[in-house]
Length: 179
Length: 119
Image (cartoon, rainbow over all chains, first blue to last red):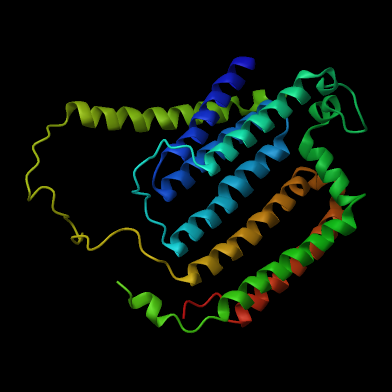
């Protein structure tokens, strides 16, 4: 199991690194799909099917479709500027932020507080025994049934909002005929 | 353990990738490569490509994508219910029906506004 995790994690890091290296935004987006998919496998290795399904269906499926559509709507071409190794303010800030997050992660996961144990009502053991999907289904349909129904109103409003926003544009004759 | 149930999926993935890689590699290794200008021309209802593949797309594609996104999120909520379908019986069915009807109202709105029409 641990070996599987290391293989998948290495592949995920490699595909995340790919996003940084590739110059074409479409290839970057596809690389991100691969990264999300591998993260989904990691969630399965952690015995959490629900999060894995969300990861693949929502992130790799829906969110990345939106990313690709935004890339195509904005007409982003591959970055052809020469790579520079100069350290601008943005790079220094980025490196600082990365080191900060890394230190935070090491601090949290290195301490004894992060050890998995039977904490809370829905502990890791219970989720593993009963299955994450079953627990989510039970809570969703009993205790949280009202918030669940309200989500459908939220989704309905977002469908309508998308139509209202996108339909306001003038007839797209010019857009189509541009070379 | 959940992860063991997914070993067949992994095997299927391996077989699919293996077959793809195998035949691509066989084609590269065994196939003769004698390119001529005529051979590189498109054939069988193909046309010579004009311009770049990077083109600004119409916002109408985005509306379709958003509609897809909403129903994709809907599937996520249907999935746990489907797993526990028998336990919840009629109650679960009614709850999901309310959820579904409200979402279909959004779809009906799209339909009436002509968002599903291309023109």
